[in-house]
Image (cartoon, rainbow, N blue to C red; front, side, top):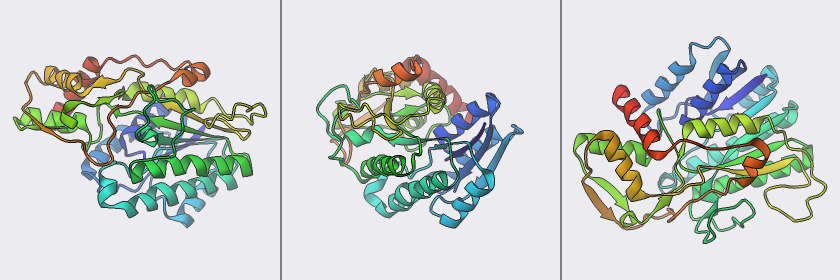
Length: 331
């Protein structure tokens, strides 16, 4: 099939595009190569895709309404995996308008492209951040998510609402995936695995927020990609039997799933895994909770298991070992 993968120079986007290409599909990768972090890393990721004959890269901003519309009309994609977004909870406190342009306007141009070109299935990235300070554990897609604690989370919840309206109005099959703390080789330099590894190997202290009393459902990139590839083949159908009023499904061809490891790890154990992979102990600076952060994330993935047999398997020690090996070679 012919896929559009947005954010193809991003962490999850590159790995997803690579898997689709390995499976024999044609992939057009879209990215604006912005400088939120070092563009050289994005260039490196694109070099991992360049050898594939069925890959083409298009540099374009999602907010380019005419450009996106023309691309959809010209290419006639069968399926779209929309992973591009302005990432980062803390950065949303500093530069909120970047999230409006990329996450709201950009999501709208993708929905319009799907609407006017009969795309079979749109899979898009939501986030575990939509759960905010949800006290119920584990986080379930049946939980209410009406109280985001960051603008980033608010844009991701907005993406789900926008997708539902298009599924309802135009019959576009849409699936939103709420990602839970993805890590692995070629990961983002603004996230804890990179920041901690870099500091430890340089002999510099690491910042441990909330005095280490945090838990995250760290999910290895290969497990995430496996879930994406499986779910893109499960095209949602209109559900006339939605009598339970489940917010993750609808009478429209619309679904929401958690995609995580289903095994939250305390920050201290995560740091120990990095120390072991680096063969070096970290110097730690303990700090209070940061604005926009949450204490714990924990994915209930039962629904994704039921429809796609999704079973994450990578242990944190093995995953961080793979990341540190990649980081040493990349740096």
